[in-house]
Image (cartoon, rainbow over all chains, first blue to last red):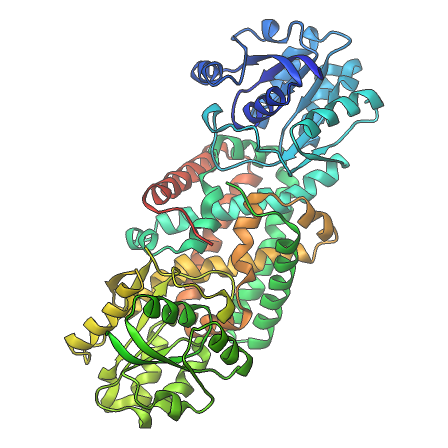
Length: 293
Length: 293
């Protein structure tokens, strides 16, 4: 058995899916759930995601070998502070936050000498849905899970968290936290901003009824991520602010280049940009498995 | 039989799919294909999309009751000019262009007194793929086809083109051409610019290998349309330039508002925008059938 007792803090889509995957693999004997949202907590019990529901963090953590932080990023600093006095020497903590440096910074303040207990992580998987009822054990199958180990982590701790994700079907990559944050700002955080901006922009046009009525499949795909949790994405904006701003600036510069080319009827420039983008996107398509919901 | 002989000008994804749908419904006795690309033409023959292949426009048009223009927008003005002397009184022309005013303007110049023969159209369907081998008869099933009839169209002509799309499974809506162009600039042309800009922007970053390796499902969905035909989208930019520029400006203003809120850590503003966008996108999801490829 990989884990005797997993303490799941935040019983939503990501944490719930990992718990289901571990249980299905027979890799976890007991999942103790903690969540601020009591309805989510009882839903998670009904769905078999967790085996015990706790509104006391101390009770949830007690006797666990791994504590998984699966809350929005904004909740993590306070939770890390509350976790510090509850840690026993054998306990490991990992998280699923979409930004890593901010979690590490908060953990260094709270855990101090016990910082080696935290192996920060981020599975590159999800849907636009939230909450335990959308959790499913296959969410991480064939996906990538990034770990950003600290100098203070011992090899056994990293191996244990790696095994957790591999058991759920993910491929694990070890990456530097700052590098993670810069890359994810571009591939994930920026596209969410674009989708939110686009949908909000169209929803406020006079023709909004027709706009959504005449929307084709491309639009639906393009804006799917605008259905993601506003609270979670608010936290990501705060947590990865600087890299996100840099990515937004780079994007705006590229969009402006297209705008100028459209305005000046610069066919050569438009074709160059569109062809280069198509080639890059086609390469991506050729090495991915089909997109799942 | 709805159509004795359909003249298909442009045997790609859209025209090919309509021809297949009409033939499957037993609504078209013969499809005469014309295309500048001789390989596409012979592929369309092999795939049973067309029944005769022509490199002479006059031969393709001769004896047809309906001429369907299914080329990129940029090719239409010259084709309309070449079509003018080939038209017989009973012939109708329709097109599938993603912008309508430019097609109408070109047709008024070329067809002059015969302008009533053109019933402009635009099916709101497609994939990011191009060419006859990606055509399939279900492409328009459950989709919308917009017609933008002219004052010179008689009711029978509009009814005939409406029947064409309804036979292919589409729901037909009649819309004013300028209104069509303004709405489609927002729902379709702008998102394509954003997808091209994003992929091009990321493809030029130093970390581009990792950027595409760490891309999640959301990114793949978001950028799928960047695989669309550069030539076709170049033509759309030229054909719907003014409405597209206006849509890009509106979008940039909204994105800038998010940027400012991220920079100033304005939680209230970010949550307001994200929640409004999510509510609008969730309404869209609740009334659409699942997205097809």
